[in-house]
Image (cartoon, rainbow, N blue to C red; front, side, top):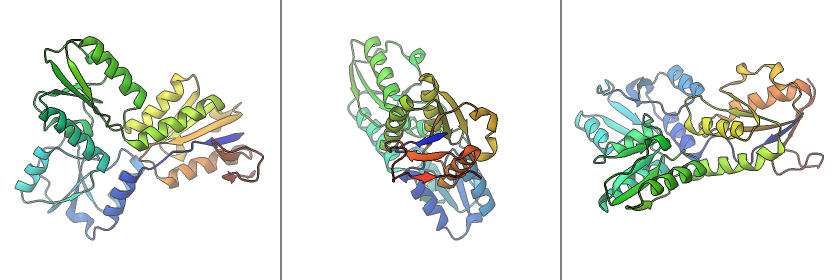
Length: 301
């Protein structure tokens, strides 16, 4: 079995930076992580073992600890003010690209536009954006789109929405609102774009795909959905313990990718397990099996 690894996969800089900040905090028991730092079960278990307090993403009770850590998904300015008014010290790990999405939404609102956010209505990032807006709209699918009365509309997207999906929803909004001036500010983050593009390059070359990442991770789920939509046999796993040999029977060329909150250690464990099934050789997606430059060769165990 040949394993082709996507050229762009795994943890993004925003998640790495957030984990680095957490690693420098001296007293985990004095810190409440305001929601899920990332949508990855292994990372969350690691934080629990370290002693951090975690509050649910939708919690409105004021945390009991003196320090509150704002996750990579960000929060609204309204929520930030509420926590500061309660005397909490904030440690902010908001991804800079999420911050740009907040700023883009505010820019559109300042132009007098009704703001539409493309994304999951209940996602923490989306909630953080819309809480600072007046009468915002959230569009997760074509079913949410209608002809709105406003003459000026502004559209941004959840940073982890695939470019192609954002373009489809934007086109549907424009078609349903021919009377409106619709302005689009592209807030899909570059790591999401890179991982989607790398998977798109990979799909024509494989007959099966393994996507590594948390089930609550939007960008990981989007990678798996893209594989299935292309007709490629696709398996999404959070960790190596979910793998079973039977799933790989008959697979000749396997693709491997991972979401932006997936630990490198987890990817390596999955890769190693698959390799031990039958002496697989793994190469970069743009590599050439049989050359002297494979990323990794896994011999028979």
